[in-house]
Image 1 (cartoon, rainbow, N blue to C red):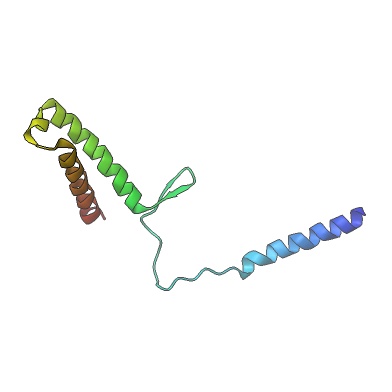
Image 2 (tube, one colour):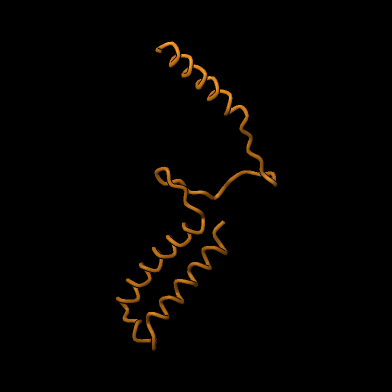
Length: 97
């Protein structure tokens, strides 16, 4: 019984060693994978990084705008804040390489 289990495990090991040699990843274009962020084993797409940094910038701008009481300049402050977030995000996407 033990010999059969050993032989089975040995065959599984040899198959596991062969499988990576048969694996080939191809791309339709030449080049390198870039612009990826790895946080503790989690792969984050570049756009998510832009969203995060736009939010951080928006929080800083909100703090300054609150200190200067700029919210009274807008008829609809939440809409103005959303528009500002979109502008910050668009700037990051357009100018951050």
